[in-house]
Amino acid sequence: MSQTLTVQAMQRLDQYSNALAKSYGIPVNALAKQFSVTGPVETGLRAALLASVEFLGLVTCLDVDQIKGQVVQVGIGKLFTGRKKNGRFNGKIGVDGNTYELTETDSCASLDWATLCVWANAGSEGEFLRLVGDFINKAFALDMLRVGWNGIEAADDTDPAKHPLGEDVNKGWHQIAREWNDGSQIIKAKAGEKIRFDPDGHGDYKTLDEMASDLINTTIDPLFRQDPRLVVLVGTDLIAAAQAKLYSEATKPSEQIAAQKLAESIAGRRAYIPPFFPGKRMVVTTLDNLHIYTQRGTRKRKADDNQDKKCFDNQYWRMEGYALGEHLAYGGFEEADIEIGAAKPAEAPTTEQQD
Image (cartoon, rainbow, N blue to C red):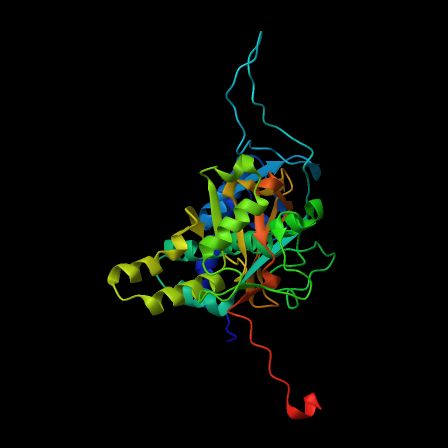
């Protein structure tokens, strides 16, 4: 619905712009021009994004100095205790040849005038500021996860209509695993076949526990298999299929509760359904093994009332990319090869076909 800004909406938007400019330490008229975000303000922006979406705060988000470089090793699963004759034992962490590459990343979240008018009438000045700020931060933060799980390439010109999950924005974690060591960390089906998850027992896996256990034993290096931080990330399609089976067989309240809690623990590991995670994918890793890097000093912002498009634009430009801390601590299924349910029986040939 097209609408002009009401007087109250204009006042609220001016108040938001003044507050935003103050937080960045710039004149309000400088918001309409691209400005750099550095120092403590840069740290504050990063913290606001991490706080806006819970799952983003669980992964490793770091600022780095170079566009290309070696992954910052956080030492997951490594032994730090021992001894050395005539010296001191030292379990070092650092870089190990695993590299990353950042690419230009441009985000723009727009609020149309109609929405701003509704929000201006929703409550106080503080409520309007909160609604706009939360929307902007959450939009940017969710896109970081959307690309992290679905990104395949970094195209020169992205096409959100063709790739609504950001498949062409950057290479995400799963794609990085696909390309490492001939895809050794990804379980795929044989050519022309499918990997079947069938809770009725007529497939390759009957339970999510079986899938996760196979993933751990097949792809995760023994050094990391017993790490208590190892978690299972699972898509909603797999969870729904498993829960449907449990609900259909539940005859006691305790069994119904068990079905409800299925998404909390799988194969003795804590389970998560991350935002924008593909429905038929399962991944086992530690959350701090998932890295997002932003080049320090490259963050730029711009916010202005776009009269031509009847919206308020909020832009965020930076150099950003993804990495895995330890490839051997990440394992997953190729979701395109996963089918839910038993294979359909081959149809018997008709008389004409037999002839």
